[in-house]
Image (cartoon, rainbow, N blue to C red):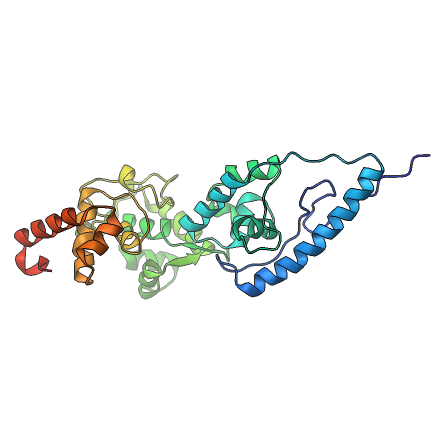
Length: 311
């Protein structure tokens, strides 16, 4: 009688034929502190030892079926892009990709004890197919405040004042204004604002003052945004009027992020950066322009408004 094939199911649901057995470690920030990596390394060594023991058993029974090995470069780039674009933690990346957070850490951090040099086709497909989705994330996860800020700005441009939006949310105007200033927010809050945006977006708001303020700030109207791409930090120029300025794009550019800018926004970065004391070379580096181009923009701004634009 043939002996039964030994089977081991490891934490996280990975079977013995998985090339890198699963498991789940909790990481609460987008970057992994050393302590977390040490705990991950210890767990990875134990998982690897268990995997190799059972691999030897399967080989002995003639049941070993090695998985194809895929270069993880493309999957790793996708994870880095998602994390950079939306400031996601390892747990959030795990939820979007259907992988364990230990697997995500092993792909992202070279100092990880189980840093991956290959992955299976299934893992590669899952990661490369992943996209940002508010409904796929737990409510307590934190994300970049970009889609939410854009929705609030668009509602203001449509005539919905922050005070009216706050009243409908059952919160204070001050708390809502603070939301616009935060770099990250919870998924719960982002979903709440998204749902309110969907309810109000097709209705003209009653506040002419809010509309005027939004226009003065250069905020895009709802018609300039696509609901499918409003959360995408790279989707700027294609989704709004080139005569308007996206303040989020300006802030990101001044922070050193590589974002597409219209000519008007480049000029605004020069203006704001000059007021902050940045040199022509600093601004040229941020905008990927020559110093001479920056100096020309500055000269044009001074000629248009000498008192306000003086460097």
